[in-house]
Image 1 (spheres, rainbow, N blue to C red):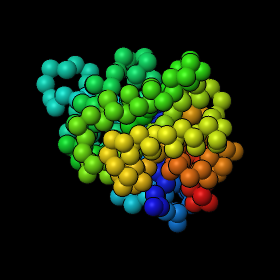
Image 2 (cartoon, rainbow, N blue to C red; image 1 turned 30 degrees about the vertical axis):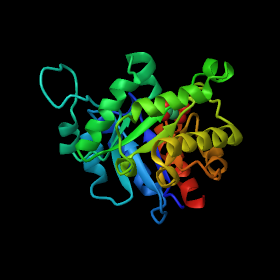
Image 3 (cartoon, protein in one colour; image 1 turned 90 degrees about the vertical axis):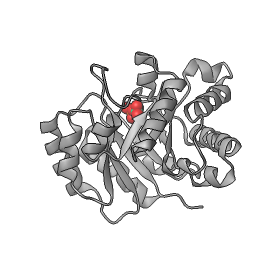
Image 4 (tube, rainbow, N blue to C red; image 1 turned 180 degrees about the vertical axis):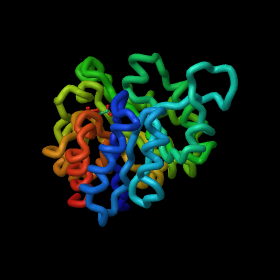
Length: 255
Ligand code: PGA
C-alpha cells in the first residue's frame, strides 16, 4: 500500500508570530509545490493563528498545535482546548512528544484522553512515541514502544486510526545531532507497524503513516525516507530554518 508522506515541522517554543511571517514567506517561496506530500507546521499556541492565517487555504500545507488539554472547557488555568484549536483552523495536534512526557509528566493515560479529544473535535493527532538510550541499551525497546502504543491508543477504533499519524522519535536522537541509522529507524518502525497490526489488524497497520523524528536534516532525509516503513518526518532543529525545512520537504518529492 502506498502511503502519502507527511513531513512536519515542530517549532517547539520558538518562532514568534512576527517571525512566522518571515519564515513562511521564505518557506512558501522555496518548497516545491508539485509533490504529493502533506506538509505540517507545528507552532506554539500564540503563533498558531498567525501561521494558519498566513498559510491560508492550502491543500498541501496544514498547521499543528504542539499540545492540547483533554478537558473540554472550564476552570483549567493556562490550558487550551480542542474547540479553541479547531476554531482557528488547526488540522493536527502533536501529542505525547517526549518533552511533554519527560518535562511535564504526561503519561500514556493522559495522552490517550488527548487523542480521543482531538479526534472528537475533528482534528488529527500526531502521536509521538520513543525510547530513551537507557531503555534501548537495556533491551527494553520493544516493551516501551508496545506499552506507549497500547496505552496512548486505548479504546481507539480501527476506523479512527485513519486520522492518526504516529511519530517514532528515539529520545536519544532528539536535538542531539545523533540520528538513528536508516537501519535502526527502519527496524524500529517496522516493529511499530507490527504492533499496530496486533492492535488494529493488517489493513490499519499497512495504511498508518509512521514518521521518524530525531535530528532529521537535509543531508539524511532522502536516505531515511527511502526506508519502506518511514512515511515522513517530525523535524525540530532543522525546521527552524525555512530553507532547510524546504529541502527536507523536497526529499518527500524525491522519495
Ligand atoms: P530534532 O527534534 O529534529 O531537533 O531532533 C525532533 C522533535 O523533537 O520532534
